[in-house]
Amino acid sequence: MIASLKDYSQIVLRLYTDLPDTPLKPRPADRRVVEDLHSRGISVHTIEAAFLLASARRVCRNPTKPRLPQIRSLAYFLPVIEELVRQPIPARYLTYVRSKITLKPTS
Image (cartoon, rainbow, N blue to C red; front, top):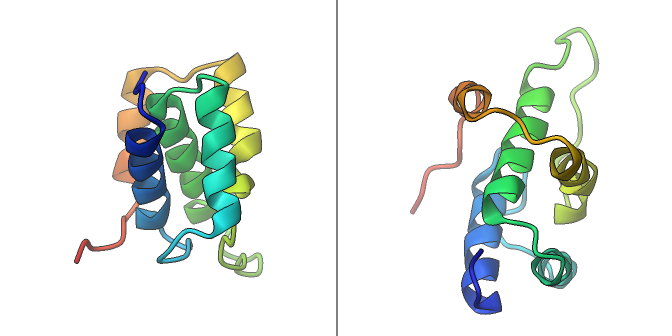
């Protein structure tokens, strides 16, 4: 667990904004979500896994269905974070999921 809220926030918000279909800059509400996750002791690893899993679910969505709108809030990922708190996914599966996601290029 990263002790400093500042370090934790920087890492989580960078992971969030690097994802496809997310804003380039976090909003104040996103920062409040991160503060709550930090206070609850949710690990960065769990959050990253939730980001990747939710993003993979979007990418692998049935192509005949309408395109989903852009993600506007980090809160979008809270149900998946809760899912992984209850039942973590194996590291090998996370590696597979990571291979399905194209992150935004870093500047």
